[in-house]
Image 1 (cartoon, helix red, strand yellow):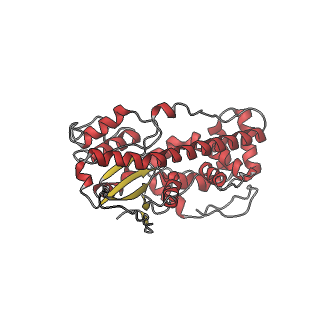
Image 2 (tube, one colour):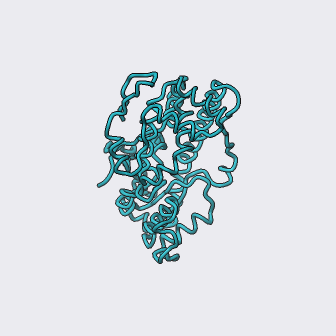
Image 3 (cartoon, helix red, strand yellow):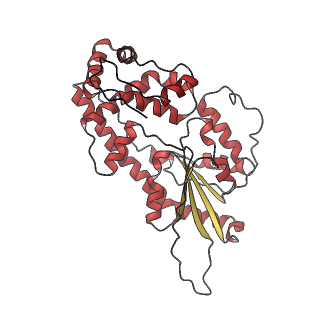
Length: 340
């Protein structure tokens, strides 16, 4: 079986019932955490899906029509096994979707959503970094975005948890075959950053188990900032500067990296490894240079050359790059080797 598993299962407390009370099946919740940008990241989910009685995918901004389509596919009413344009050479997101719906096809699994629906999702504000002003102004803007993002994520996670049990009970009522089971296995597939949902459900007393699609999840600096705030820690200047550089680096070279590999963890390891190599002063130099040159990619390319960092040009080179320590050049302001 692929991926890591947290084998600790917390039993739900026994509920006293009189003889005339309806005895409902025991509910067990499984969480499968993995990125969802490339088709490969569905590896491992199929096994968990085959063993599930109810399936709940992540679906921020969903509407009833989308849910009806997935249910129709699962019931075999919509044939998705024919040749679909783009399934071999289309964008990663398209190929992910094709593989996903084919996993559902003819499974006859009851499907529902517990995520924030379209009408609620539209209320979310979209905050953009304030690139004007001083470097300090930009870092403060990034901190504000991170704090707002965490606030929204927390409210979204609470929404999921509050709607999880009611939606599962609805499906049990709608599917008589589920009532006959002693135990119902509910599978939720979510992005890696949503693992706090699993922890919160355990605290509520749910019977839970979790799986990770990757053996070694990596968090970007933006995610690290959100996780620090989640535990009431501050985003200091050093981390904020790396969050800034990460945005510049990924914005400049993201498409290049997409051509090298369809492994999100490799993308994030590469970005984190390179950005870890920059000091706060170097991040500020990048900011000041971009204000003059007006081309972030040109500035980053020059800075990487200065630091003797050559970006990989193939997945083989990427693997080799990630396997070795990245040593600081003589021109760097720091002398510590960085390992990822």
